[in-house]
Length: 248
Image (cartoon, rainbow, N blue to C red; front, side):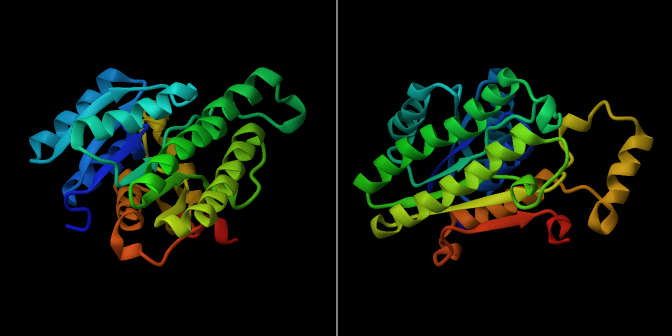
């Protein structure tokens, strides 16, 4: 159990990749703080973890609110005694349009959540970890933060910024026992595709290397590795989880 007795927070954990990260961390022995704006989904994640014999607690937060980052850290410490690691996964992929058609409201909302929210989380987590012996942080970036993709201007910009924040945090945290890395998921089979017609899904799958979409559980395994001591010499890295889609 690579995360035995670690206390890990996971944002965006009500569904999809976030839920998979939380469940995998719990399976690997972590006490998990499930954080999300979606209370019902977050509680479902907690229930799934506890029914499988793990430990978890839910807190409702909005990552775009500055004070909620500190609330999350405080909740972890109050509930489980400390904070050892964090998976900063919450984010949005709103209407995707080309740069010339991107309106200011779309741009701002995307960056408020994906970039400024990430900054809020990192700042609160690193402050605690610097004062308490270190820790590990893994951020969710995107394949769109490795290669250009047409029509995803605001999303791509926000995720490129996540990579920059990751590297900055990594170099500033290393002398304090803090490792910070990021994962760049490709096209993952989540609830976003629940109403997609089968023929359209087949087109998506055929476009991917290997002919299939990723599974959230595969992302959970990557996060668990990076959060664990098995990745003790990995810092400031961006690890693609896209079956090679960003390689060409």
